[in-house]
Length: 383
Image 1 (cartoon, rainbow, N blue to C red):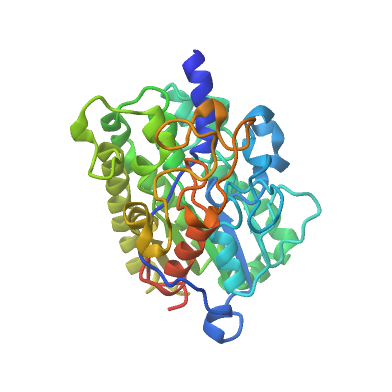
Image 2 (cartoon, helix red, strand yellow):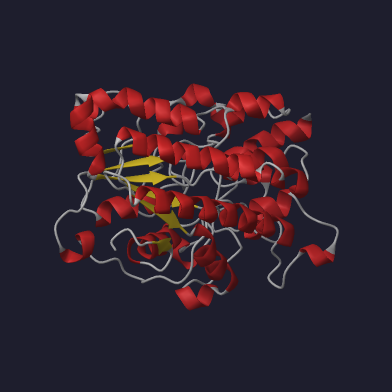
């Protein structure tokens, strides 16, 4: 039980990662220099996209686990913690800036103006409903912050304040960008951190992907016409997994020291998701009105940045920037970023990995560039 209690906290830090590859080092201005393409942006997902919901909704998790609400989180851009799991801006922040939109407020913030966008993402979010996770022995409160279907409910409740009447909403949503994910990573975290083998977790991948695809269909039914659906990251290369889920079999590690079985699980998830997205693309591009569904490749770029950091201007790949200096990867669960004894590296932009489970602002900027103009979004957002 002590191990399970500790690993519950790991889930909050390791909430779902995504993948990518080489992108333009600088982002051009608003929609390629033209006018604003989207009237608003709406985001769903987990800690990779949460801009503050977990802190607004503090009852959803034990306060002592909210280490990302403490310095040095937020040091690079905001100058203080904002409940973002990074040293600065997230991928969705860079997307909003490039599209001429404000940084998205968390949807749980009372009195917010959500007409130009809202963020439903929350740390610990899963693609599968909590009741299902509970039915397979994974009913820990950490996974009950706001699953995908709960986030969709939050969004529906916001619609009257966003756009009024249903017909007006359909018109507004059709001119908005939706980022649906990353989702699925925490479903695997719930399984792997609490006793499932990789093969056992893999058995649930089709169900996880089906849930995500169903969520996309629900958005289209509401009027969404532009939806980005990210995959998951090469989690086998991140310190939290390497430290918590080590293998005694040397063959399980690649030449960089990443865990092959974990990365293979991510590859399998992404392959199934891409297949489902291809089907949705073919279906909705011919619908009336049409909808454009985009698959965002979180895996490829992140994997390349971690394996060849110098190629992208980084000095360190796998090692976390923020930590207490423990172990091979600067990651210890009991002295993780935001806790006493932990500190950030002098230059966070020199690292790909921020806290052992999430990427730095510098890496997030590159990821956003690859999604906006390619080649890591299919088709690119600004295509």
